[in-house]
Amino acid sequence: MGRLKARAREASESNQKNEHRSICLHSFSDLSHVSAATFMYLLKDCYFYGTHKATAKFRILQQQVKRALNNAPQPGPFTYIVQCMYIIPLLGQSHAEGFSHMLISSLRHLKSVESVQKDFIDAKCLAARLVLDILASVVPHEERILVKLLETFDIELKDMAHAFCGSELGDEDLAAAREHLKQHVQYFMKSESYVSAVALMTRFSIQCCDESFLIKLIGSKQYKAAEEWAAFMGKEMIILIIQKYLDVKMLKSANELVKQYDLAEEFPDVNYLYKER
Figure 1 (spheres, rainbow, N blue to C red):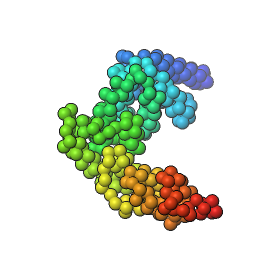
Figure 2 (cartoon, rainbow, N blue to C red; figure 1 turned 90 degrees about the vertical axis):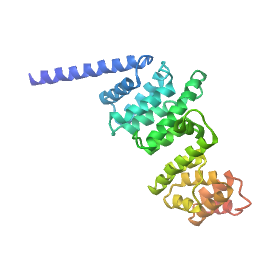
Figure 3 (tube, rainbow, N blue to C red; figure 1 turned 45 degrees about the vertical axis):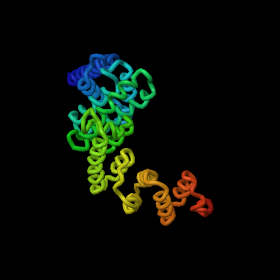
């Protein structure tokens, strides 16, 4: 009798999972009347009821999300995802970064689609507002998600100024927005969140550091961020990072930068040293 009850319970749970999966797939097939909050609730439940391992579940769900974003989310896919990003922290911290990464990554294939370009432009200001809310800790998202938002929505200083100051923009508004962002750069530097600091500086042309910052980046092994910041600062800083790489015998990285920025005249022996190592 106990076995029969157990089998009945398993069958009931299986039916419940299949029924829930059918509801999710049906909802994802037409998002025109599905709110961002409902979409996120269904997405979380699809993950919860999934029987695969976590990585496989996220991969499968990402494919579903990519398809769903072609099914008339209102007012458009980019705006819809920004709305979802406000909902995600309410679902719990354990999977927030994973869901955020899934949603933002699902937008990549849409950036070249002509029919959604208006929504992309409209969503930039909303995404900029979200960035400000994340920076102010109003909406809790990881710093890596902040950087992804900046990149995916191609947010510019004018978008940040629009979100920060309002619709009518003047030169003083751009300056005010840059100064506001500079304060966050300084906060990131104090907390040693160097990747986020570099992302803000390079994207919004914020110059508030000298070569000691480059040394900190290299010392903390944030080499990619160091190279991005050096490129942003110009030739003098690129030469400095190459020299620092040579000092610590990072010959491959030094040689790559010499080639990338055509600095063989300044470093004539680097290619030879790299090949002879």
